[in-house]
Amino acid sequence: MTAVVDRPAPLPADTTIPLSSGAVVQLQNLGQSAQARVLLREEKLTELEIRGDIKSATILNRSPFVLKVETGIWDYTVPARPFDKAFSSYTVTGCRCVFPYRGNAEMSDKSLQQRFDCKVLLPCHQVMEFKQTYVGQSDEDRMLKMGGIVVFEGTMEGISPSSAVRVPEFVYRKGKRYLHFKEQTLKDAIAEADEQMYHHFGLVLEEVSHDADDPQKRKNIQRPHHVIADFMLAMKKIDHAPAWRNSPIQAKDSCNRCGAQYVSKTGVCKCGFVQEPFVAYFASEIEAEHVRMKMLTKEQWAKVHAEQKRRAEAEGVAA
Image 1 (cartoon, rainbow, N blue to C red):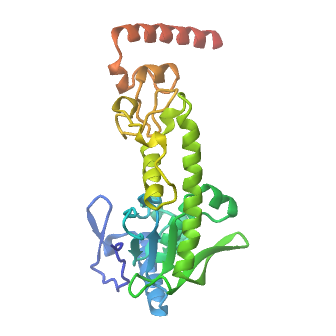
Image 2 (image 1 turned 180 degrees about the vertical axis):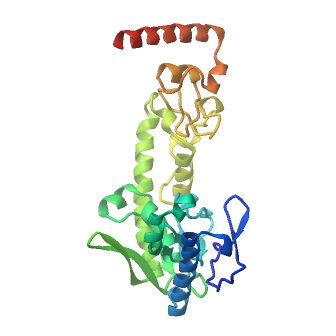
Image 3 (image 1 turned 135 degrees about the vertical axis):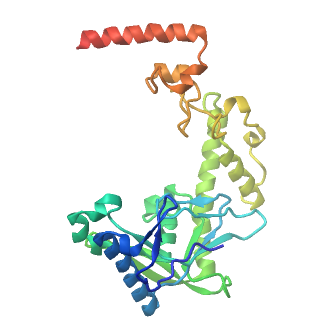
């Protein structure tokens, strides 16, 4: 599976540029700044291609979870590793371009002055965002993040555990971030990723076991914790499934929107859904006009009206 490829190519005068709305606009009808940005993008991509700098990059996922990084620039995900496979993989082949200004701002003088700020994100830059998110940069990051990610330059073609791969890393000089590569055998890179992942999963299982013994915290056990327990058992990192693994997540304890086990004192799930509007109103999470307030009973509305009156009187005193 690969990402969309942005190939550098000459742009004739009658080129049409697709917009996010689905419409298209001709290059000759763009404003001066917008034209300059599109042409600059092509120049930078062509220069990178001629230099041979546009090289594919691959992510190996050793974890049982789907990987996704919210950047607003791309929307691809890395599939979860099946329990009976050594990894899942995703190869990125195309560049992505970032412009500091969009829309009407591109027609401003400020945009014209800054048009050379066009940044080209090579495939390795893109997959490194996954590494930053799931592996981290510092030793402290590696204590907290999941791990299980291997990133290297190139594709899976001809790759074996003994293959030497170029592993990208970020280095910082004078406040700026640069991409640096080091050579490493793939099996060593996998061993590092596994060490972090299994350590993290072990800590998760230990924490969940403590929560399972506390009736007030038992609802903190979510489906991802079940997946980790199943995965650790399948990988023979634990001898038997934890006792709490067989405790079902009941529908009545789950969020109506995302299905996660619902734990909240304010009536609002972590996904933002107002699970208990009556509780959410008294916690000042929502107003009485919120659409979910239509779920209230007659008795609950009586209490809401009383609370509205109290708040109005309190505001009057404060004013």
